View 1 (spheres, chains in turn green, yellow):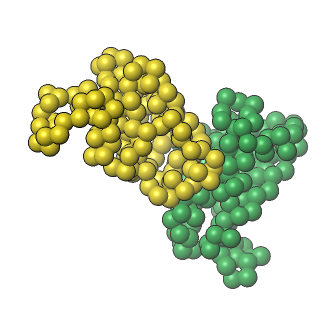
View 2: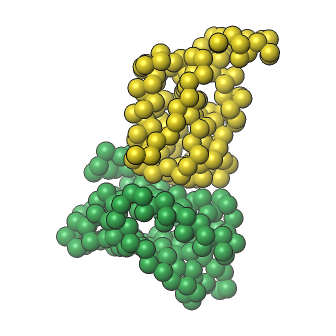
Length: 137
Length: 132
């Protein structure tokens, strides 16, 4: 896998999210991703960035354009230094939420991307990485 | 603070969301809209989301909330103009917006609202006049 471009975006408040979504759109458009794939990627990112703000107190997002077997994709890494997730399999379940939400954020985001990875250490923070390839798989 | 305008048209309230929603803005809209339903005794709420490119679980929930709250206050909510990519994404996300009436565009949405409140006017030209 080759990293073609890389940038970092700090997220501290809700308004940063709009800027972040626009930036993903620019990157996805640059590699020629279809509108449906773009929408799925941005929606997944929107879920994850909300989690980062609500539970992790904000954090940093790495936005990368990557390439595997000459197929480009967008990789987003969400890093926060929040309280972390105690039980990841439980957090990945549809309908489970410690907040007052629908509990669709994490499992929904996973369904909307091609690759999904979550690492968390209680007390230290959470890192979520997602990839959506240009061709959608 | 940024706000989404709500227009009153006869017994209906019209909302056209032209900006990218973030959580606080969506919550403010929910609040404003329910207050307006109460204040104007509106019978229907039409929300046009044709300019919205992203609806995630939070905004989906707000749309559902608005529909449920208006229903309790005797008003019907119709969401119109959802982009195909948004619809595909919402279902995959796991949100089917059950309980929310939808229509393809504003015109069909208005038609649906009129039918719902039993004021369907067959005279095309008289449609708007009948509410003034």
